[in-house]
Image (cartoon, rainbow, N blue to C red; front, side, top):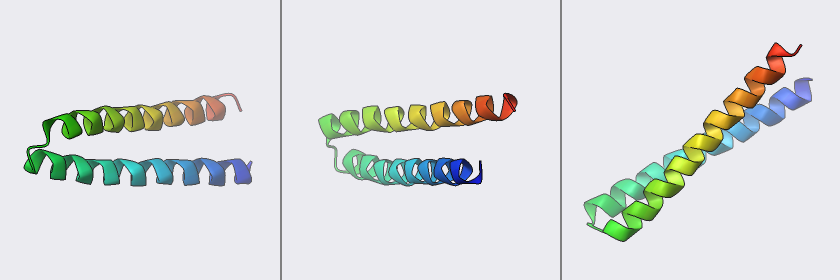
Length: 66
């Protein structure tokens, strides 16, 4: 159980790190007026945020089943 929690925490931390990087890339693209690049980055950021939400939902469901 503890190992599963550690794995979950590591996965969430990795997603948070990726989101932070993507936000920085998006800001740079917007400031540089790279419209198409910004659109792609917005989509990627949205996907990462959804993954983070899905991970949280899965963990909550696991805890509720105990």
